[in-house]
Image 1 (cartoon, rainbow, N blue to C red):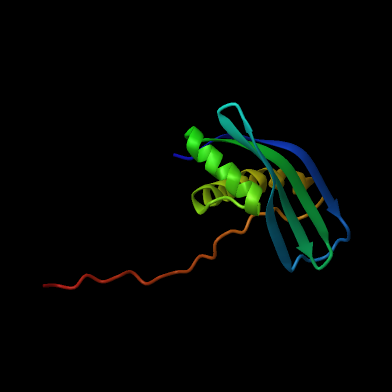
Image 2: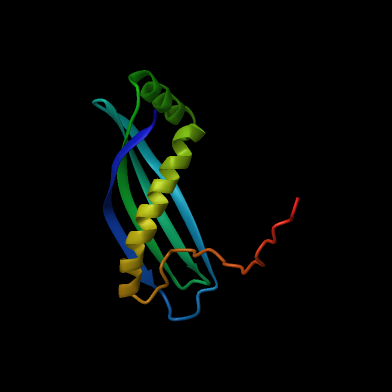
Amino acid sequence: MVDFRGIALTETRAKQEKFARVTDMDVNITFENAKLQGKEMIIDFRYTVIYNPGIGSLVFKGSTALTDSPSKLSEYLKQWQKSKMFPEEVTLPLMNLINLTSSVNGVFVCRAINLPPPLVPPKLNLAQPKTKTKR
């Protein structure tokens, strides 16, 4: 079973190009490298937020350690070397881990340079209470 042993952010860059209203944010997660190290696979990544139109950017680089059976780790590495991708069973939890860690840490970095946090809050709607039907 896929398990991640924490996450380490190793580099941060943030820049405000101009003071203006942010109309859109582009978030991109890129896997930059994968290698076996002992009984783990180390995956290096880059998390990038671009604030549009041309307002600023936020970049985190980091790594995480993935654990699984030796045969699965070997399979994941072969797929990575061939296509620079991982199977969905790895990719989805990995992207969620990176997104959560980077967006939460991005709140503090962005606050210092007057950029909005890279969090997209859900839109809430009011719903009418459901009425129970009698049987």
